[in-house]
Length: 619
Image 1 (cartoon, rainbow, N blue to C red):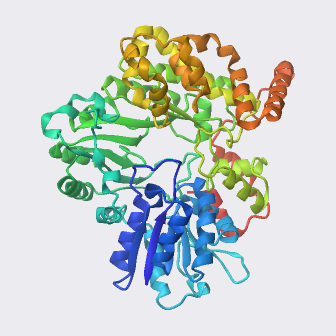
Image 2 (image 1 turned 90 degrees about the horizontal axis):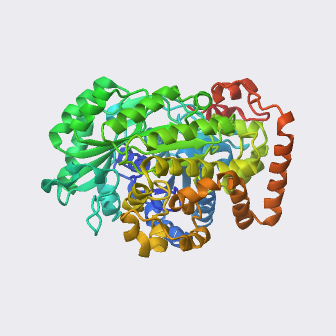
């Protein structure tokens, strides 16, 4: 029997984070389903084939079972099209969709060619599906397999409950040989230095990166902690709890990639890093013996004391990444972050004082966000970006709150009509946000009482204030030297604007490295580029003087993206609310508490099938 596991494109670029979910499902099935299955791994996210090429590859293999790993809900359009094409070409192929998109199980089962959804951890469930297929293809005989959602003969939803999660030592157990066979090992394990001899962030700032014995060493991601101690109300992780992989297991996997792939640099893949101090202490003792340089993400602000950070640095750590999300105490409550604003401030102070070039990430526009809470976030970013002159003022990322299935934010959107009722409304929404990221204003929902035009301006307003604060504190010469030094990460890290900046600024980069500002003549080219927000980075003083007109800048951008009629409609709405603002109540209609509790008080959306209720509630 032939089995293919395929990934979906997560964004408009191929991520270098290994598809650990898909790989773990393949590896577990190979070890537990018996020898009579042939497996193929089709990494669509990395390979980026055309639609025709993807279908040709699948049809040529002719799988009896096609598993689709859709880790983000922005893959809905792709999954809908892919499953339709596969069903037309291979009508007998069983199509199973897993990953976080499977939280929209009713939509997938009724509006796409999906046969089974696996919304939780997939290793055991997918293996049990394969084992059952040995004896029957009648899906009515699958209802006793836990961990699935499917339709019965009357197209009613059947939720078979939860499958028991894997023990920690078996979690994220994938075989790098599957990536080798796919010809993608260099995509996921790659040099730290580029052809110009420049190290990638965050390793470039630490002198240990340049020690002679690390020459030629490569960088890999290694997973070590699965799950989280918190349940943020915008987060679409479907699996409950947290599992720390045994340190011995992590080190065995590390030793393998160090020996086979010459790995000497690591990024620790953890949804929450450092929460278990007993585990952390053992981990630091062991990784220090291996003399690798590493960074860690998913660190919570209330987790690491200066002593722990010092120990981590001594063990080879060069970076900690926090999900700060907001500088507002009230918005932290809405998000259910279970940290305080003061802990956020202290965490940033601790990291920078230890010499870690820590970036900051924020979620903007959750229900209850106001001008005042945005100002609190601006103050926090200003604080974080000026703790040291060595920091880049652009090392922060702000995305709009994105409603994803299986989160309280998604249910809030459904309750308040941001997502239209019924399957038609959900499909319309998921199609609109397909292959879009959280920085895309065209599809983002304005959950606040602020006029949309002003809401659209918030991200630019944050940038203007933060850039000028750094410029004002450290001086123009230092500002431009720093921006030019880190041109590869300009425009907010992970935003993909470096190539645009380099192309436009090429002749002026050397002058900027000497601390000289850009000529004003370059400004029109930046404004006409695909990323006009770059202009704010390179002209901080000018845009600070224009900050009170930032809403009009958003208006001009809306003309370009949505047309004059839409832009003028938003302008009239903004102006009217400004006029009537003194008479309007400026109070969030709900108490500032977890959005989960707000949604629970609202109850389920009418007409919800029983099988969907657990998926709507999330983890």
